[in-house]
Length: 214
Length: 214
DNA sequence: TAGATTGTTAATCGATTAACAATC
DNA sequence: TAGATTGTTAATCGATTAACAATC
Image 1 (spheres, each protein chain N blue to C red):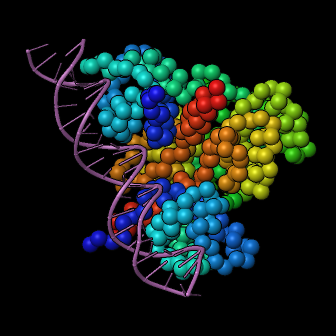
Image 2 (image 1 turned 120 degrees about the vertical axis):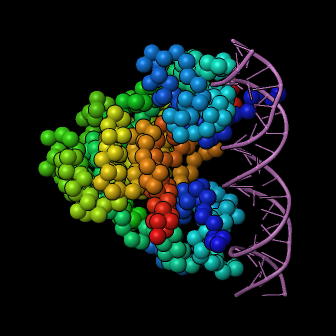
Image 3 (image 1 turned 180 degrees about the horizontal axis):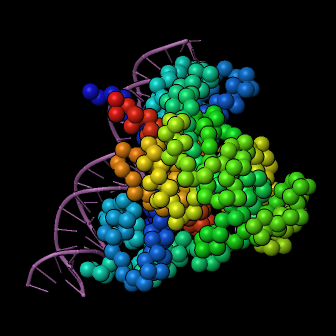
C-alpha cells in the first residue's frame, strides 16, 4: 500500500518555525493565516510553505488560507508533540545545564525528568528544578520510568560510553550534542546536533561576502 | 569568469566532521587517510567524501588517499578557520554562558572577546574568563575592537533589537540562537541555529520507528 | 603486476519551484 | 463578479551516487 509519503527532512525542519508563528497569530487573536503571510514572515516562498503544510494533512480554504488553531494542532500532531516523551539528560556541564533550563521543550513533546552526572559536586543537587542523579543509576532510572529519549551533553570522550548505557537501558532515541559519531544498533534513532556545522556555514558565507565587496 | 563553483551547503556542513577525524588521525601519528576510511568512520559513502574533499582543492594520491596534515590545512583554509574572527556575544543566560565556555571555537576561527548583558547582576563579572559588559556599551566596543561576528543568545523578544544594535555597530555576521527570523540588511550574513528543528526530526523519526515495530 | 584509490563525467534521485485549474 | 489563495501535476534545479579511466 502506498501511504502518504513521509515528509522530506527539510520540511520537517521548517515546521517548528511555522508552528511558532501560528502560535503567535493565535495569541494575537487571528483565526486565519495564508501561506503568503507565513512565507513573507519567514522569508520563504509561498509555494514551499503550501507544500510543507500539505504534508501535515491539513487542508486550507481558498481565499482565506489555513485556520490557525487547526494548523497548530495539525503540525503538533504531525510532529508528535501533543503527547510527551520522557527524557533523561546525561552531562550537566554548561550546555547540559542550559538545556535543562530551556522551558520550551514542554511544548515540544519533551519532558526531561532527570539529569545524570559523574561528579560528586552536582549529584544530589537540582538544576533548574530537575534533579541530578548519579550516572551509575541511569539504567535503573530509565527502566523504572520508561524513558524513551536520552540527551547526551557529556564531553566528547564519554559520548559513546553514555550512548551505550542509554541503549542498554532501553532508550530508543538519542539526541546527541557531543561531536562524536555514535555507534548504535540500527533500531536506535540518533539525532546529532553539531554547532561546528553552523559555524562552518557562517564562516564560508562571511568569506564569500568579503570577497564580493572587494 | 567561471571560477570553481562554491561548495554546496551540505558539503560545508560535513567538513568540520572530516576535520575532527583528521585531527584525531594526526594526533595518532597517521600520515595518510583514504576517503574509504573517512566514510566508514562517519557512516557516509566514499564517493561523497571524495566529492566533498574536492571542493577544498586538495588533491589525493591513488592508493594512498590524502595526506592528513595537508588535508587539515586544506579544510581549515577552505573554512577560513586559520585566521580568527573577533566576536562578541549578547545574552549571558544559560545558553550564552555555555557558548562562552566552549573552548573549541579557538580552533574554529572564532575568538569571543567579550560578552554583553543587560543585567546588573552579571555586568562586570567574568564568565569562563570572558568579561561581561553592559549591553549599552556594545556599539562602542565593536567599533573600537573591529569585531565582525555577533552571537545572539538573548531571549526571543530581544533578538531583533540586539541584531539591530550589532548591525548598526558594523558587525557583518550574525550567529543567531534566538528563535526569531531576524530582519537585517541584505549585506549581513545570518546563520540561524534552531534546536527545535533537530528535535522535530528526532520526534518524527521516533514516531516512524514505533509504527514499524507494531 | 594486481588492486585500491583517486578525479571526473554522467545518471539518478529528491527537493524546490512553476504552472494552472479549482474554489470561495 | 474579480481576484486571492488553494492543491496538484509537471518542470527545474541541485545534490548524491554510479561508472570508469587514470594512477601508483
